[in-house]
Length: 523
Image (cartoon, rainbow, N blue to C red; front, side, top):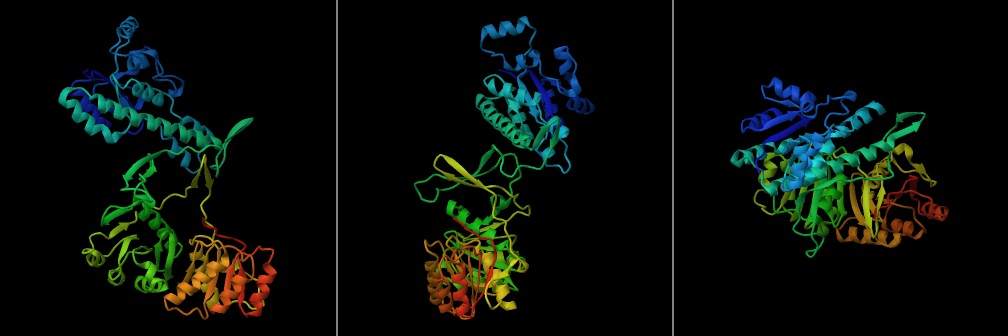
């Protein structure tokens, strides 16, 4: 079925003049409205106004332009149904075979500083989504284009036969409905900012809205999920620039796995806590070593020294472009993946022979702050991300002895890293480096014991080290074990009914203890 007539009405006018010229050359009659029609005429493209087709002018400040039976009838009537054709002829409805529409920029408007309620409401598109839905429903007869990125491919297909294959129209319809679904979800979410009390006012975005509408599109298929019998893929927010780890560029190496991405995300989240050169080595979503030093090379070597056995086959993150000196050291170890903001050419040369090593470069655009979601059977748990930070001024000294300046710096470093260790989390550290990590145990004292064992296995002394605990010590035994291992200072949230007993033990051992009043559980 040849395409004889197209209706073009777009807000985003990228490439529309060139596409309209392609249509006109076939020739296909072009209907249009408002600014789109004006732009096409100025470019020398013959256009017929929709108002001429309907016999009604645009009205109500442009709110009503295409909401008319001659528009929707022309889109919706079923070409293969004799009674539809007869009814269309009776009412002088001509077929509209191609609908080219994109929508008012509602999300961009909502994100503008100082946007008003009236601006938000006026950027809710009505006629556009209605035409898109009509054309998508009748895809067996009509094509619908909602993405300027599709213009070239559609023009090429039309130039072959002046028709669109049924498979093309179906693909375009799927894309169209995904677009309108996302658009309605964006509107429903933003309307929660409105308050109607005599007049309509607009407030700040709601942290945890009553309804959450998430539109995702598949970006990359995984070989499998956590295990080979599980299918998996990476999805990203639809219609938005890809940012964060999901937008990282893979420079070399074999295909990424599900587990690679989970560990890479954990590693990147940890190193971005620091401003000076920092390195994190992650294994099974836990740091087996982390350090912040004067150079990436020194940071890597100190992170590796924390647990070199576990670091084998791990995932590394660097918070600064990876230089040749650090790369030379990293190349001596078998690692699965590395992520960094960039790589010196000499560093890439060091890794070139490691064909399976996956190198990822983070995009310059930071990922927006997003809600944390976790599936449970029958529902989804939603929370704000853990952005809690502690400074030296926030620390409350609980013991008779206050920490020294060096201990305080080590405690703050340990606190930042401990935030990224699975609960129950215990972390031994010195200034700028970890020396023992105990993760994910059911009792806190066991986490202390494991951290001590890890340090001993790595040949590291804990004498004069400090300890971070992600949550309070429920009993004094964890402090006793830390003191026995050689730790001299502790940082913990406090809040246990046994706090005084814990403090008393720290005093007895001559340890300094500071309280944060904030915990960092990570399940």
